[in-house]
Length: 510
Image 1 (cartoon, rainbow, N blue to C red):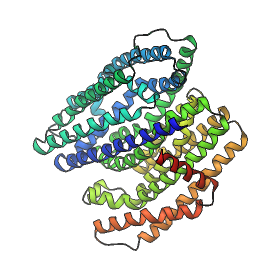
Image 2 (tube, one colour):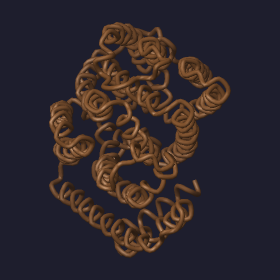
Image 3 (spheres, rainbow, N blue to C red):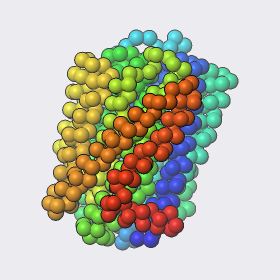
Image 4 (tube, rainbow, N blue to C red):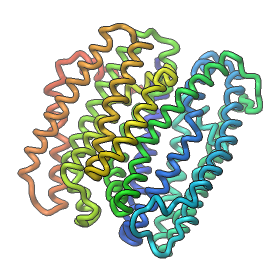
């Protein structure tokens, strides 16, 4: 228990530092591109990133399956088996890289069909796309598979630490190129250089920390190979669902409404993902510890932990949701200087906030789905979520534009991600009937309390209307206080409140 807390704490702190760097420097660069180059350049970058996220389906989540499979041999210190598993991942990554290159080149002639309206006059979209493609595939040939070993060993802090260093380097270099040269090609060429740097650093760390791992060991146990194959088949569908949700939105927006709308959507999505990324750091920091706990602890103990984690996590993400509802529009007005083309309606802004809350509702549960390796059992719902999201995106996007695309995503998250994957977890692992009732009851309370906090905070903030900067600061101070007071009033009598306080104190002082 002590080791798991220490590892989680280390991973959390390094993850938060990484996330802050990942937010601030890309934000400065995106702002510079927006002001110095124009919104069409931002739209192109977002579109190509989304296309290559679709191509990342070729990886099919092999690394996630390998991380799950590694938990047991690592706990048993079976280093021969660990070596054999890592050899499998190494070989798989090389093959996947070749597939991504091939598919990426096949897509090349059809790029113009994915863009409605204008593109920057000084940009060859084919050359730009090839630079993005190189950046996407280079990791498959350059030691990226070793990151899985660091994560399974509960040393994700090393991965995030090197990522932070290389992100700082790339962010500063890209900003200098924009300010001094205003050359978008050079700006993008920095990405593959930094990707190589990051992978080389992680490779050096694994050699130093785990010199006993032999990446050429081919003697994987038959049972391990069967289990790994099964998990990979399940993760294929998970990857399809995630890509459908995260990438098709931009591609459909570009084909229906053009690059300016893609830029506006991604400005909001950037802030959305920045906040979501901070929340995700929390669950990523303790994912390996949860995997270890599932192997070594009872089901009852793990369910109690799930409810504790969910309580603490939902307090935080509920507060984030309130902040987004209140501060989203004032921040966007400051960022884009009131450019109406790049500012959504309040209704669409609220939809983004609902999207955020709906997505975060799944994250603590996902720790146990992943830790238990239930990818195969969830395969049907991964695929259904992907198909439903794609179909609803096209239909509702044509009918209602941006609103329809966000609503489509929210519907699929709630129906096929939250409810259906919960059913899998509670029928395959937490099998006691009362467990599921308690879990759903918790979430009903959390949703209602978060909604109340949003309404009360918004009512108070309506009294503050000054200039933009003063308004933003005043509302930010209110968001810091009011939602947390509301949460305390509703939650302080719950047993999980006291237990979570004890857990957090132990975590902080560890």
